[in-house]
Amino acid sequence: MRLEPLQSTDYDDVEKLWRESDGVGLRADETRDWLARYLERNPGMSWLARDGSDVIGAVLGGHDGRRGYLYHLAIAASHRRRGIARALVAASLEVMAKHGIVRATVFVYDDNAAALDFWRTSGWHDRVDLRMMQKSVT
Image (cartoon, rainbow, N blue to C red; front, top):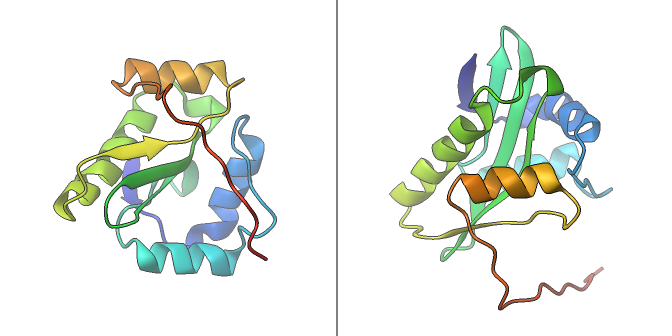
C-alpha cells in the first residue's frame, strides 16, 4: 500500500470508490471538473491509497483559510481495519498544519455508526453546540 496526493486524473477511480462506499454522499455537481478546481484550491491536502494500481482509499482535504475540512473518506471494504484511513487523514492534516490550519472538521451522517466510531476513536469529538445549515445558491 502506498499513499499519494490525489490528482484530478484519479477521478474515475475515486468516484467509483466513493459510490461503492456506504456513508459517502456524492452530489451530482461533484464532477471531474469540480474535483480539478477543488484540488487546485487545496494543493496537496487530498490523498489516495493504492494497492498496486488499485485505488483502495481516498480522502478530500481542504481549508477556508481558518479551518480545515475533510470529506469523502472511504476505504475499499477489502482493505478496512488496516490503518489506511488513519494514514490518509494524517497526510491531509500534516499539509493543513503546514498552511497554518490549527483545527479541522469532518461531516458524518448521523446514521453512519462505523464512521462515527472511527472519528471518535481517532481523537475527534462531537460538536453538540452547533447545527449545520445550508442553502443552494444556484
